[in-house]
Length: 261
Image (cartoon, rainbow, N blue to C red; front, side, top):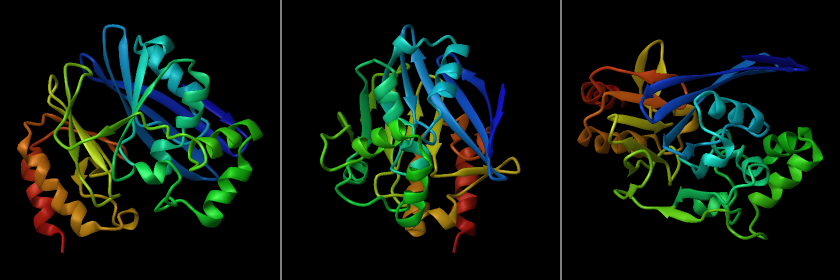
């Protein structure tokens, strides 16, 4: 499905990975710059969790994608934020305001103060933040400011801990992988042997790579964090940027680490 209007065009679709886990792909082009975001939905029966929320303004597209895979708005129980970056948390205010559900919101403790507005976002501030806020409709701007403000209650209801298992889709294991941000986390879906890698890795030209150096403040730590992923039997990797990778993930991680200065 594709929507075009003004300075922006958006297309979106879904890809089934296995029973109970699907990639929700939002492809957008704004002012000539393409961006593809790969959210993940994990569901079981009438209960669903969304991993990451895209940029601000994509509530309708996210709901349409969920409906396409048979998940109704009322089924959404929780949102997991893999880390603080705006393309991962930007849609949270609208989801909280418009869904009408009492949603649990998960994030790692190390990124919680940034999301709560106690500390400025690592990579989203100054003119970039002001420009985005001014471009938003007033209602959306007010929702955004209120959600990520130290003057309002925290939106994080549950703080993630490394190694814990979340009760979604037969079990989601939390893997704290700092470096891209202090609280960056990946999630291992046990039933399908799928790793939701967020920005710990990217897929480019069909190959799995380490995190984007330009957006990774502590690249050395981020590469070191990849060692933890080798402990899992992984059939499929979902990268937020680049989409799905299938192959010998452990071998590829070794290659990434060996080739990184």
